[in-house]
Each structure stands twice: as structure tokens, then as C-alpha cells.
Image (cartoon, rainbow over all chains, first blue to last red; front, side, top):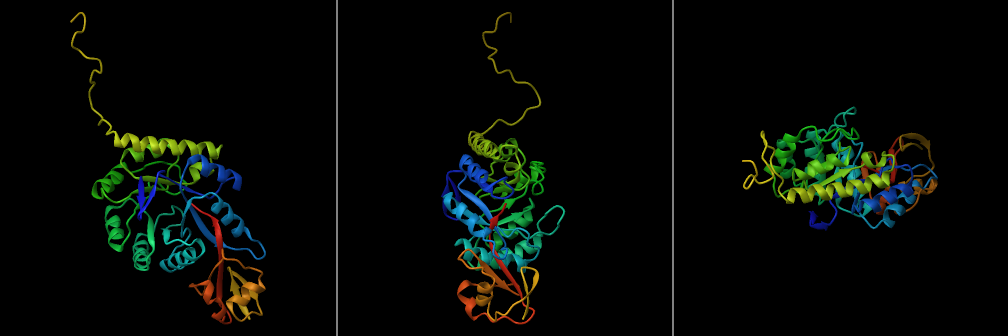
Length: 256
Length: 65
């Protein structure tokens, strides 16, 4: 079971809800992925246009846990206010905290992130920080009150897969008891398997599913890939070697 | 009164945040509001008097990653 802030989940995939071709395909992708947690956002409502109501009704019909985000916020103040608004609308203390520092790479403003995390944790929020893979940043976020960490493995939407395996391994080894979720940069199911094999607890992704040719099929593939990676980690995979090791016994070999 | 609502200039007759939502035909429990960058809970909108030039945000659930 994946335990996040005291809540248990069988699936280790967290799925974003943006950029799907249609609401029906989004719903199909959520079902086939078997995810139990989806991320949602808040945006300006257009006058006379009840888009938000329709979307919220769809999400509620999927019977999943929602993780609201503060996507697009570039300051502590914006992120904290957005978190307050999300708590009221979605009825949850969970918040995926994003404080963006650079518009091109969508790299987190790590200083603002720690500051906002401290404010929100003190207010009773259960914070899921979207962060870089920096070890010291991780320590500061835990000290701020975060019980879950969500390092990127590549820029959001880049589909580049893990760019710094060493940094991800370092986080895992330093914080064996902290739920670690790779958030952002996953492009293919094999990337997700790879980070799960490193011992990560879960993967959060969106674009790799939403922009695939068949989003629902890709969602299913990711669900299976993440489960496979988790099982492989539990099974303790072999370490790579420099030289060959015969797999067939030498004892009893003919002509020897 | 001149307001900035969701980033756009608006001439409104409303004097409170609650009245503004009614004037804009934006109602429902799925809406969240902020005035001048500060969250205003639904229960406080009726007492939230708007000043000339105030910046109001009216948000609702949307797709997110």
C-alpha cells in the first residue's frame, strides 16, 4: 500500500487531468490507469460560462481522491492564496505546492517553495511539494513540515525521463521512510518503471498520457509499468557487473 | 465602481463581493474568490465591501497536472 498523509492507496500512479482530447477520454484514461489520485487546478471562471462546474462534476463521478495544485503561481503569496481557495472548493487539506521560478523550464523557486510550505504546513495543509532533486532542499521541506516529497526527474512536459539518476538515488537513500513521488518529466512507461526500480514510492504524470496517440491505452500501460517497477524493486534486482557470469551450471559439462 | 475582475476592467454597480458574483451570474459552491490577493471564504463575501479599483479573482475547478 502507498500511504500518503495517513491515507492508503493500492495504485502508485498519480495522474494529471490536463490536456486530454476530451472529457470522455480523460475519464477513460483515469479508469484504465486504475489511479486513485488525480491532480486538479483552479482557473479563472468565464462570465456566464460554467466550465468549472462541469469539470468538477466529471471528477466527482470518477470516485478518486483529488490533489489540487497551485500550478502557475510565481510567488509565495499567489501560491498560499491559491491553496486557500483550493481547500474551500475541493474540500481537502491536500495541496500540490508549485512555486515556479523560471517560465522556460518551469523550474521551482526553491526558496519560495520552502517559505510557502512552512506557511501552509503550519495552517494544517498536507503539502506535496513539486521540487528539484536537491538533497538540501529536501531537508528544508521536511523541516518545514512536509511529509511527502515530489522531486522532478526532468522539466514538466519534456518527456525526457530521469536526467539525474544519482540525485534520485541520493534522495532515496537519505530518506528511506519518506514517501517519494517522482513528479514531472516522465515520457514513457519505461521511465516510470526505472524510477520505481530505484525505490520511489509513486509517480505523478500527465502529459505523457494526455498527449499520447491513445491516452487511455497509455494510461493503462503506465499503470502496469509502475506496478512492475515497484514489484521489481521489492524483488531486489541484481547489480550490473563488468564481466560475464555463466547462467548454466559448469558442473557436469561435456568435453571438459 | 471600477474593478479588475479576473484581470479585466469592469464597471460594476455591486458594492460587495457577494453582489458582484450575483451581478456576473457566477454562483455555485465550486467557485473560489480572492480580493487584492487575499482569499475571501464564501461565508465572508456578503460582508466583503469592494473599493474602487479592487482586483478580484473568481476561480473554479479546472484540469491540472
